[in-house]
Image (tube, rainbow, N blue to C red; front, side, top):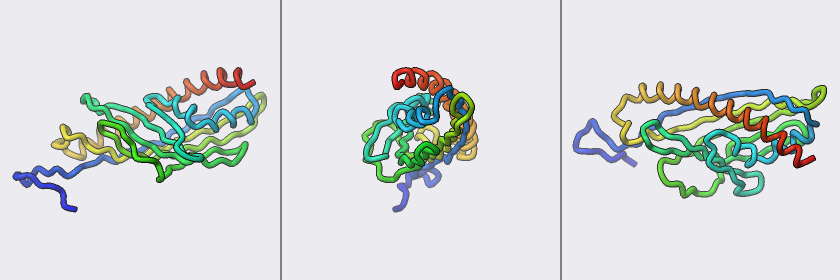
Length: 191
């Protein structure tokens, strides 16, 4: 399919994207048995709702989840990244989240786009508790909003990369604080 062309050949309505990605890791230490920490992380919606800017996380099938993360582009436009996820588990050892490709059609308004998210939580017993090595990797192709399409792609790519680095740091720091607080509240109720 050919992109639509305007009367001015320098202007097209072809959709442009910037490709972004990031990876973060964190080690959690819980003063709790490994099986309790493992059970906590198996509740994918509850854990992913602790991410800053997470709008929703819900199941849509067996071991399938949809995570929606919201943001703004800095110019008053709201955006949402949609991550369809598949849970894979090695009981008591590792919980993996990998991209799924069978998610239902979304009905979000505004600028919504798919992303790919991989996460892994590896569990290790340690004296007095459990160590969890947690890593997350995200990849996105973000459509450039129409008000920004006249800016050079290289400038938008650089701006996007800096924003992504800031966002990933913000997300892991908030996630870390939220998990530490939420885990102990949850463990008291589970115990």
